[in-house]
Image: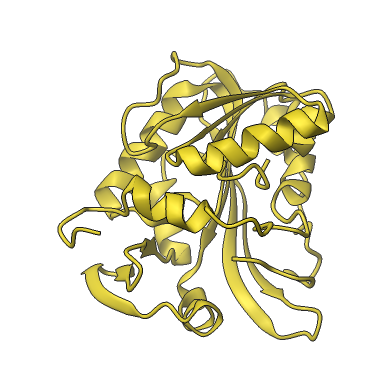
Length: 56
Length: 197
């Protein structure tokens, strides 16, 4: 960590994701967004900051 | 993965190679195809204009200062097709004490209003309703709901804003502007269950 970094660098994120635990075992987030995606007829989705894949 | 499982074409980007390695392994094990890309979201996105029907970011956009946050949202707008959807979950200002209690991460440096560096080096920006509306002022707000997430014992453990906004396009019909769910999917704006940070 460098204190002058404007935001956390990749090493901080790597450490956060290095464990084996599921970060979102209940599958929050996507189920609540799905009705909006469906209504809009979305076919192509970009997930920004996908982490270990539990957010999509 | 759930979006890919129902047939959507998902492109997923993250800064962390460690996270992406885990995500790729899960996708392979699940038999779903996701286009994973390693990229720093604070930099220009490696995609063409109007590439996507929707851009989603769940508990990830809230790690940046105000200027960077606005630049990222600008990139999200650029890669969205006209009338495309932006869907976000971001930490709310109300989450500060819960986050500190849950994770034991002390805020050790105030970088900007509601933007802190935590003891482990993580940077965290807590969004107010006014801030959500301000950074999305050029969008059509479809949904802005404050959610208090609680564990199985009913204890609040996390507070987020769910923001759904539509890229403005002059050609939108009145039906397109209004044809979205009108009520919070979480019912009373709360949801239980186990939460892992």
